[in-house]
Length: 438
Ligand code: PEP
Ligand code: MN
Image 1 (cartoon, protein in one colour):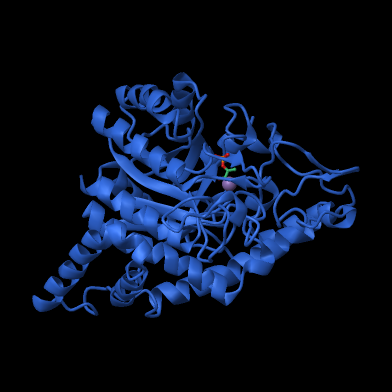
Image 2 (cartoon, rainbow, N blue to C red; image 1 turned 180 degrees about the vertical axis):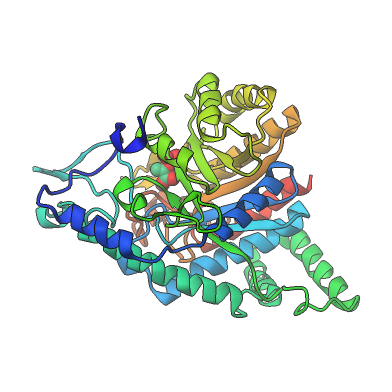
């Protein structure tokens, strides 16, 4: 059996009026958002990461929203990722693969199908690709037309991302100046040493006559990724590469399967096993190591470097205990995967003020645990996966600016999980750079 006949978890209940079929046909007639050749380049970059010759930075919203796809928001997210990447490049002394959770991150798995507020119960919000965040019966009704809007908004977003990353905005010298601006804030004085070292390295390169323009320092490779959750969106955008005859998801360069949809006999793993993109699978704290081996057999039977990334999200208090058995088993099987830490999803809790939040210290602690485990096993920490925004939101507590429970209500803007704000993201990059440099 192939995935269209298999059970697909977390799919919306679409209206039974033929509108979904029409939308799927329309999507199938649209051009791909990415080119298969770009996905192949990414796979080879990820193969480098699996050997410790590159480091992946994957970041962006938990749930993108249509109305947030503005020039300023897109610019600030790209800028944040570029700034983090510059710091991480220095820390890792390897290239950093820059990948957004962007231009397609419009569908969300939910732990409950319904949401109750007071006396009212409505279908849960499943991402802008399905329904609207507003808490009214009309807004929460799944609408297939939203799949088309997701495509168009992704297309416009990706267009601007490509413009920013190839048109001069991403020049390493500007990125470096932005980072100097960040460090100028006395709250971040403890990162001055690293910042000064980076500054010296830049001046050293310039003094040696390094030609930044010739070095390609003005353009960067930037990849788009999202969770491949809604198969009614992914299938019509799955295309045959005319060069090789192989199918690719063309909704993004990299897609992943989430913790709630990675059933071995389910549709999602089957789907990603049939496309040729590099793909990810999230692994939570309760995962059985033998199950992980079966995921590898299914998704990466050829053991192709760069093909499969495991994104572990175990929780700061659990990772040191839960991760080693998984990594040991995978390593013993001879598979070469990319190990990435998602230090967000195992560390969510409700604040005393009633907001879903995460503590910056827990995020840092999980990444630290991730590095320690890999160091003790002699395996490779290949990257980090974070929920972040370029805006000054107050969704996660802590960080050097000490966001408190009481601050959360000030700018709590996420449609789903709490994100690191711009400053917290940069602070995390400095801390991870220190871990990488050790
Ligand atoms: C997510 O990445 O937003 C998500 C839902 O993650 P997970 O599948 O790890 O819970
Ligand atoms: Mn999330």
